Length: 274
Image 1: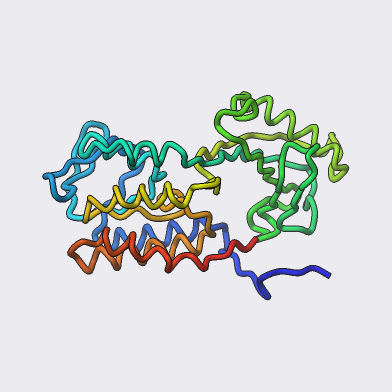
Image 2: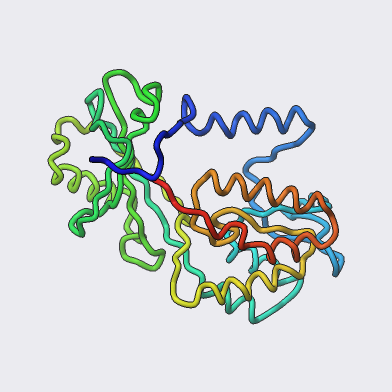
């Protein structure tokens, strides 16, 4: 029989974007201003605390900052303010795996009855697929479905260097090889890349993280959090909890960063559930 770590599974109607939109509404109703398309370029500080965020040459003043940037990028951005060779060396060995998501539209009401399928075989370029309509039927029209195939790759690999068209072609070929779909049923396919997807737990990564957090502790009103910000391979609900805990820590005032990095054991019990 099928075994799962969960006895029941809930999914947001219309997709997980609904959660983000609801959060956006509550935040803006409370007076928050949300700025999109503003890549962070750096920070300003007074030698003791960070005083602002720089984006597109514009400075936004800040009393406190919560960052979900990849911790590797965050440390490098802070170097102009507080140069530290050890922290640069520490994050230099922290590696994220990239993910190429290939969406395949099939002319069939349903690809399979499964929400997820794992493909452990080496012969396939992808290692997992998921079908959004199996989480919520409104995620696809009645006569078609979309299956998303996950292709993981290191940034320095030949696979990551391939153009999207080649990755899509390889995914299509391997999908046909599985026998789960016929060629004439595939309508179209497209790709989306997520560079910082999986923190790679290589030998010595905990020591590198400790040294990284020691450096980040120099900035008392900055908290790095989330899967990318803490190099913590977790589920989405875990990251949401991390965000709430980060906000609570900053709200307490004082040296929030020191307390935050000293309390990372609170997230050590997280277990991935798929």
